[in-house]
Length: 82
Image (tube, rainbow, N blue to C red; front, side, top):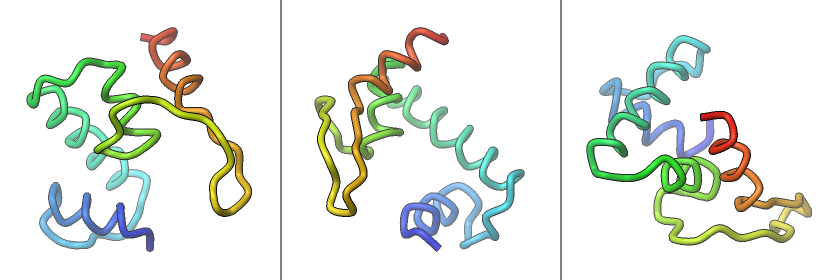
């Protein structure tokens, strides 16, 4: 199970819950709500969701597994759908 799920599950559910659709939706909702309460703007939340909680700026490239990423594009697509 990915480490991010373990951490988020512990924080919002209280233990490492099974990664079900219902649990994932609950944890996602609570995570976004927490970021909003911290004063993050929608584009900052989208960036954190895509690139990690501590991401300060978008980036693009190829990760260590050879997978292309483009967090700038992801943020733009999220903002387009808001």
